[in-house]
Length: 148
Image 1 (tube, rainbow, N blue to C red):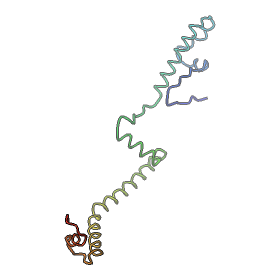
Image 2: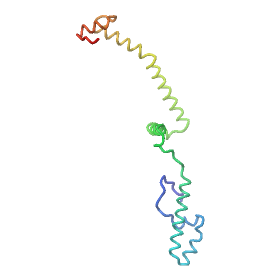
Image 3: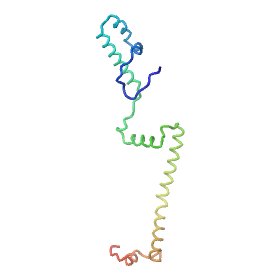
Image 4: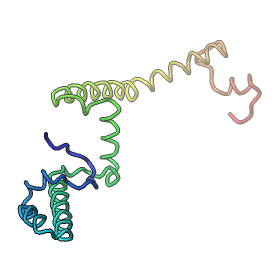
């Protein structure tokens, strides 16, 4: 049965059958036959320590998400849009599509929004004053405000 990889070290001690595969534990059967219970327990604890160290060496080092702001944001982005489940070429496709849409939105905001705001301003003046070229002071007299 294959051993399951855990993200955290296990506090369980390995079974005697798995101890025989560890180095330095082949003497365990000899020790237990001699009747030295204390020595057998120490050997089991040593074998457990060896197994724990080997498990920690096998585990993949994970980037601490608290160490870097951008790493946290990237993990949030990947988990929100399920990018971690995609193949690399699918990730590239999705990210290229997102970049394209953001580029279109930025172009619209920086290039066309100022002209659209002017258009809205002229139409508002036309509906309020009846003339789209009327000065703002006419709006102030119409409303009765002195601060314009």
